Length: 460
Image 1 (tube, rainbow, N blue to C red):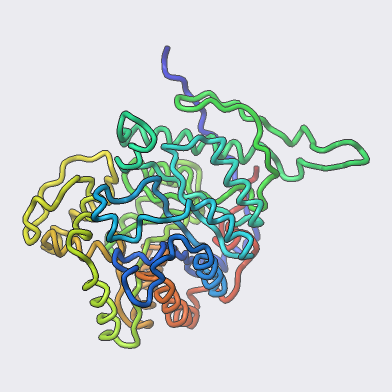
Image 2 (cartoon, helix red, strand yellow; image 1 turned 30 degrees about the vertical axis):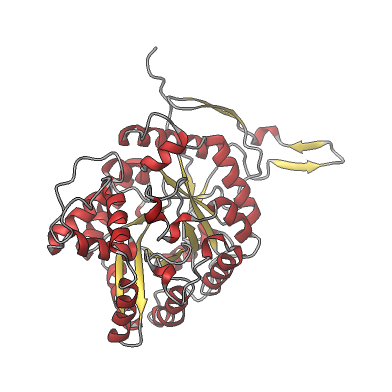
């Protein structure tokens, strides 16, 4: 039999209040990317870090409430359904071996916050559309319209070993499945119109059948029939987030995403990515403001440049070489870098079905800055290839403002090197500087994540 085709139909968008939209567009968006003891690979070892954060729900509640008081748009959690290091000796030296399943954690945060967006990663590679769409719809109801889904394709061989016997699926196959998965999820969220459930006891009418639209999907990867057992989301549907930077990943984001998290070392790289992705939107009948691009940035804040550099050096001194090199190898999708001279250059990288865009970013940085494997590993350990900013509040605000005003970012995903202190420093010292410049909100625009991001409401 030939391959079955499926239609890609995305609901049209209706414009919200134009004044609110203009106010939202003029200021940067901020996410707080929360990760156990910190984004620096050795952050958990710092005396000011909460080393047991991975299994402490009260810690994450406190961080989410801190970010909400500062008016952040969202908190964000990544996920991988596997231990990150294959070698138990390396896993024993990293704080990434324990973590809550993020959707379960967001349910706890939903009832302990009231305005901040709640975004979690879930893979299209090892989930099914109905189950995942139902879970995010429930989270959206629990939170009053604040849920967001970071759609990823799983690129780790360690994850593949936990789900399938055939190994890691090829890159193109993963993205074909992801595209169909996204199509089905949106169809399910759109299957129930606003006001469909009348709950009219005296009249004996629970739902208006004219506002219920069962899904009838026959695709290459999925067959799905029926309705989602949830009322319409207060924000229309959960916000869609993506982070893929390969060519196929950018096309998927241009068609489906509301927010894209990205990684760029230089202003030129960030501008090129921003221009490329925004230009792709018109192919799918979308406007530039329909998608917010928020690069990751890891700030280390000091009252002086010297103090900030000292803070950074303290963290760097805590990195065991073998842990840094293993982390670098995992993002390069190569099993072992330690067989190469650590003070020599990166070897040529073979093609990968892993994280292709991150492999290119690492290789480009190593070549551009003439870094050895050891130097590149130590630099990469700070923020896994994301932009690191080390300096005073005004310097950090200057750099963020430059990228925001230079068509390189619509906002930023803040990756504190350690928690809680790294996030506290950014909120205490950098946020006031951004507000002084009129670059960040004083208060939330509305109750839903979509409103605060300045995104249009789906028509259905």
